[in-house]
Amino acid sequence: MRLASGRMARLGFSLADPLDASMARAMKAHDAAHLGLLIVLDDPESLEEVVVWFHQTTSLTLVAQTGDIAIGEEVRSLLPRYFAAFFDEIRDVAPALADVRLAMPRTRDKNLH
Image 1: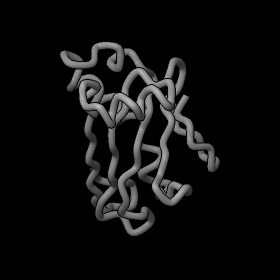
Image 2 (image 1 turned 90 degrees about the vertical axis):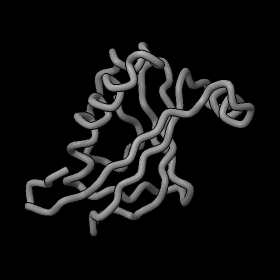
Image 3 (image 1 turned 180 degrees about the horizontal axis):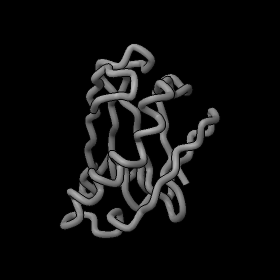
Image 4 (image 1 turned 30 degrees about the vertical axis):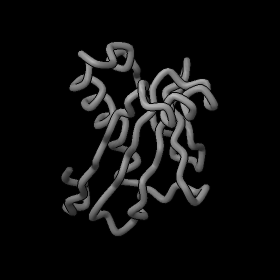
């Protein structure tokens, strides 16, 4: 992705297999319909760590291993667009995600509403 600053960053998304026992346990523990992973690479304002996302009834929650999610403001502002594109791309395997509409708060809130 090209950022407004002219820098390039890379995003990686994945969708967990709900038939995998450990993924099924995590989904149940977080009352999630879907879960997956997000990673931001090559952005100096973002920590390069895997972030888990949970799709719950009305929100998409991001959880980092360290507790604090360190995603730069430029990338943060573009995440809803790229999550929407990813969810549209996987529409055949997770149709409910294609209808999720996202807005990324500029606060330290970890939920995409």
